[in-house]
Length: 583
Image (cartoon, rainbow, N blue to C red; front, side, top):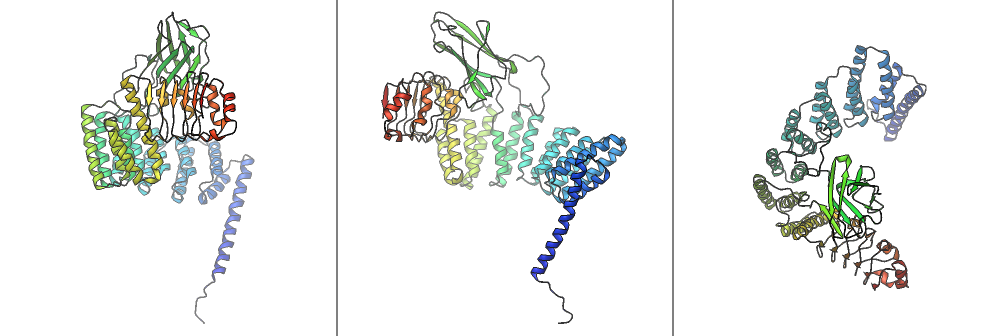
């Protein structure tokens, strides 16, 4: 037995480790309590600085201690000269660097380093960029470092083309770098901006236009550069078809620029003495400066959204004072001013007309598809063929299938409709986990196609039955629709946005799974609602219909509510205007 090393039992080892942890914890807690006590007493001395450094070195994610440390440093600024402050802050940068070595993704350390860099009397931005380069070489997806780099670039005025070259290097070394692709998408509009759209005839030039900045940029990229980007990203996804980074960037390239902020439609009804305004984005009309002028006279009106759930909405309505426009023998000129955006839209209500409107169609606004140049059309056709070839090699690749759909949408959404539907079906089989997402996206595209068809036909009937719709969207584009047919789909509700259909007279929604009619709310012209074979089960589900004053016909056959006792008498009480009730 002599000469042998005594091996401690596992229990002994655990007990020693426990005691060591307790010892360290006592030291840590004592230092923490000392820091808290000093802060409470308003002590900002070197000892407090050392205590916080001791604690943060072992736990760099203690936000309260970073806050205390900044208070100490701000105090030292008031009692030290500039050279001493420079030295203190350079030491602080070294300290944060040591913390980042312990945890490269420490929120507190990166935030504190940014705070210190911004307060340095003589910052060395080249050193900070070098630090970012080193950190990103270790982990090119460290979003804390990316955020810090953007701050450094902004503060130091690094040229945009230099940063774009930086993304070239990172993407060249690793295609699977979503952060680099995303950063590239923010730089391209600055370095290669697209041509600005000509001002709308309804737009008034602002008194003074501030220079463009990354925060206000339109995010358009010139066509020449876009065509080059297609080639770059194609190399990436052909190299690794299953990596999503390049596919997401490609989807951004195919996207449209942000819509111009404008009034896209003004509608006026003589019978209801009501005005409806449609904006290009949801707004709060009560706070954006909306002015209604009728026959040259400003009107005091109260704007309200179409549904009480909306504080921001693309559609707003107001009632004119009684007797203002109800005489059919009079002509009226109406203007709505959006003073915040220096834009307006006119609308004339002619003699003998009960309603009038002035609007930009979805086609006019390039809402669902941008007009393509011959060159871009040719390039996108080539891209489509290339991705189809890749899909032949990778038939189960969901990114290929989805990109083919997006390319078809960009080229000719109506011409490729059948192929698009077939690809969606394949997508749902290949990626069944996201089948619901693909169903909703397919529904969105089918609604867009139907809106385009309706506009081409110049009718106010929106028919999209038997299309397996799972959701409704773009309802602000249907303000003028008088008859909608949603029958034989897979809809479960008519959402609050449905209340944007202010001209609707007939609603057909037979053979769905509708349980909720929340959006059928205060539709002033609605006369007929057909809901045969749905899932309406209680009287409360039908409550929104009580807000529709002209409702005359209601078909509820095949709904669970028809089995309820005394349903007919209760419906008569809830909906006294209905004269034709089918149960």
